Length: 99
Image 1 (spheres, rainbow, N blue to C red):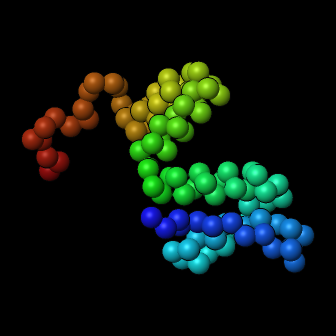
Image 2 (cartoon, rainbow, N blue to C red):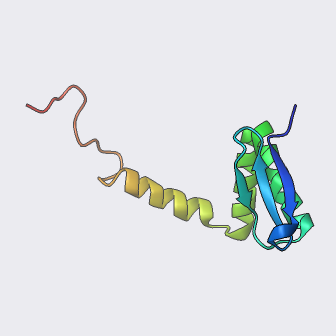
């Protein structure tokens, strides 16, 4: 399988590293980083294209390592924003229509 993202270094721009999307041709700056960090970012982007489910699991593991309460606090907050009413109650009973 051909990789979607590749790394280039522009000497004109002070040795800045760029990510090139081979599907669209779009070039994105990776900021003033060293080559190893830039390669890790490119590899992560390519891995996310190959295995999106695995990428999601890795992201959850990183977040859990950074903040053990992340899943509890953020998911509860998201549920509260999506369902602002009381938990377990529907705003309209099934089959009821506004007239």
